[in-house]
Image (cartoon, rainbow, N blue to C red; front, side, top):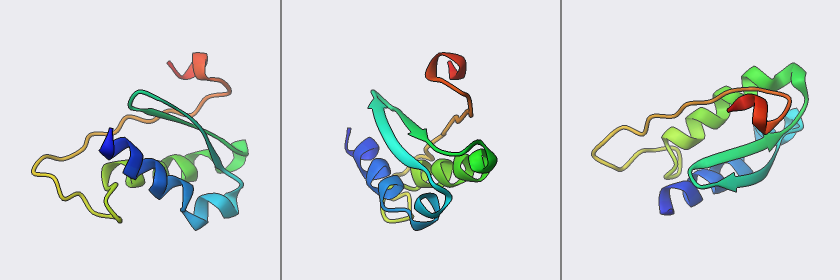
Length: 80
């Protein structure tokens, strides 16, 4: 839960995501759902993956790598 919370804080505070028009909508277990313009979806996905794989102020202080799977879709059902 702490890792997910730190990742969400990184995502919420990310200036580039805000400038691109993306915002964090929802967390479900270890998943986060964001909303934003389709044109910048791939860039936003890359930023989110980076935030989630290095959730501790841009670092991963754990002894294991954090594997992140990300998808872009028009709705949550399509992303599953």
